[in-house]
Image: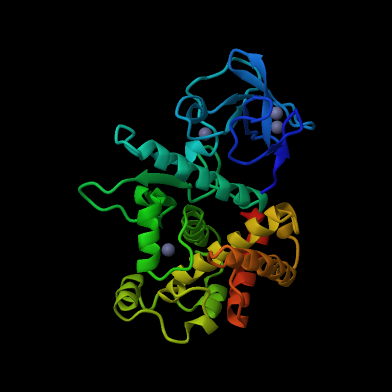
Length: 338
Ligand SMILES: [Zn+2]
Ligand SMILES: [Zn+2]
Ligand SMILES: [Zn+2]
Ligand SMILES: [Zn+2]
């Protein structure tokens, strides 16, 4: 995640909607993909303030009215459309009931995490199935609260569902401890569920034999049988040698999603640490990325320990996990052929 600068020279961060120094509004430009200052042109139109861009844009409805987004929309002539949604908000099909107190803030936190993760997806050049393009499956988000029926965070056929409770710090931490997870975050959920989405797009019907060689056969045992077994007996005692997490041992699909999520963690951290920019990562050797990640990770882990908080990065990746991460890396490098 790159930071950028306002017209006034102040540093801008990804979620900013306002420059705290000069008071100009700021947003994420869909043309240059920087958070930039918005130079007002009147009638709800703006010019992107990034030096090399200057695109004519308007704010997303969810920015202008709902305050849960900072996305912009290109306007190539004509007037502003007050109902228009930015490209990322168009992917959200179900939003929470906003008449329930607290739901708007939870929705905002979920949208922030979603956009941050999609930024990495964009930097890697991964295809996304959107309305109006020919890529399948279409990516759709649903953000829902438990009502008469419980809502399960998960993925099915391109639809990623997030339970609103995951935006509640107390609930999420309770679940993290209950499931024995080192991290449980909104960005982590999106990265994991995108793993299932990209399995459907990049592995299904394309390279299952190579997938099965590394991750095992997803047809046997069935997903349902594997799930029952996992919740009854837990992970095998020696899982650390072969899997990136305990949950990855449940079924090859979960192993892939956990590995894919860990890969996106690595790319996001390397991009932010500026050691290796996101756009270059798909073209370099996976071993080089892992070496760089360990270097950054060791430093950040030590800083975290100084503050008494959990490690950011796993200390070691075993040979088997490295092979799985390399499989994901190669899959992403080839994904532009979709
Ligand atoms: Zn400024
Ligand atoms: Zn721009
Ligand atoms: Zn938006
Ligand atoms: Zn999963």
